Each structure stands twice: as C-alpha cells, then as structure tokens.
Length: 162
Ligand SMILES: CC(C)(COP(=O)(O)OP(=O)(O)OC[C@H]1O[C@@H](n2cnc3c(N)ncnc32)[C@H](O)[C@@H]1OP(=O)(O)O)[C@@H](O)C(=O)NCCC(=O)NCCS
Image: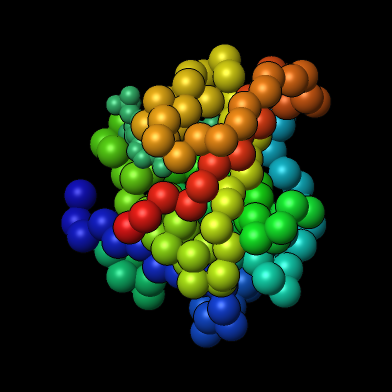
C-alpha cells in the first residue's frame, strides 16, 4: 500500500467527473452488486449543485488508484446533509479507512454550514450497528425500516467535532 489520502471533490473542484466516473461505477458494482446505483444515478448524485464528494486514493489523483468514495447532499431537514453513498474497494476494506473518508466528509459538511447528518445504513452486514456504536455520543434518532436494498437503519446525528 502506498500513500492513502482523501480528497474533497465538491465545492467546484477541478477534478472533472469524466476522469473518475468509470472507476466510481466500477467500485459501486463491486461493492453493491445488483443494488448498485446506475451510472446515471451516480452522475446526478455526484454532480448535484450542493453535492459533497470525498474520494479515497491510493497514491496521487493522477496515476494513483481511486479506492473509495462517499457522497452527501442537503436533506429536507434544516441544516442537515444526507449521506447517500459510501464504498471502499474490497481489497482495501477492514483497514480502518472509512474513518479517514468520513472525517473529511464531516469537515466538509460543517464547512457547508450544516450541523446534522442523516443516512440509511445496511443492517445485515453490521454497518448500521458500527456507525451507531462509533457515534454513540452524536446519534439523536434511529429507526429500522425495510427498503428495496434490504433492511436499513435510518440514523440522524450531530456532525461530530473534528
Ligand atoms: C461500509 C464500508 C465503507 C466500511 O469500510 P471498511 O473498510 O469495511 O471498514 P473499516 O475497516 O474502515 O472500519 C470499520 C470500523 O471503523 C469504525 N468507524 C470509525 N469511524 C466511522 C464512521 N465515521 N463511520 C462508520 N464506521 C466508523 C467502525 O466503528 C468500525 O469499527 P470495528 O470494525 O472495529 O467495529 C465498506 O465495508 C464497504 O464499502 N462495504 C460495501 C458497501 C457498503 O455496505 N456501504 C455502506 C452502505 S450503507
């Protein structure tokens, strides 16, 4: 593993969608299989006017490998961003990299002026439990529900302090 780093790609970043779209679609299918967002859904989500995107790279953004991403957009609730998607390449999972990715997203959400985060996280793979455990101090509300993607937990929380 070379240098792993995160990079914000929202706020009018100079990194054009065209240079990363193929890899984002690839990672999305690798991580979510039949439940993956389609390429056009991903394009809309990543290029939304107020969308925040954080990319995880192994190596530099030119010549390195894109190994993960997370993306959030303003939610209906006041001062709230909704995290719509988070994925890390299978060969890089289990190394604690999600914290790197999410800490950067939380910082960007704060910079955008929001104080709250919402998301729906998968229950069967244990990710919802991990988020709630890790963010016990910030979680304000949770409820479990069914979705086309299987059982999920809605989580509303304060944006953690950096
Ligand atoms: C979900 C996913 C991004 C997590 O990445 P990962 O590499 O498996 O997880 P990591 O090794 O980085 O670490 C997980 C740990 O980080 C902790 N953590 C720290 N900050 C966290 C944060 N902001 N959010 C979630 N977990 C966090 C967790 O508590 C967990 O601790 P534990 O496993 O020691 O109990 C990854 O498994 C993945 O892409 N899965 C497939 C797609 C998917 O399910 N995405 C989520 C959709 S809801």
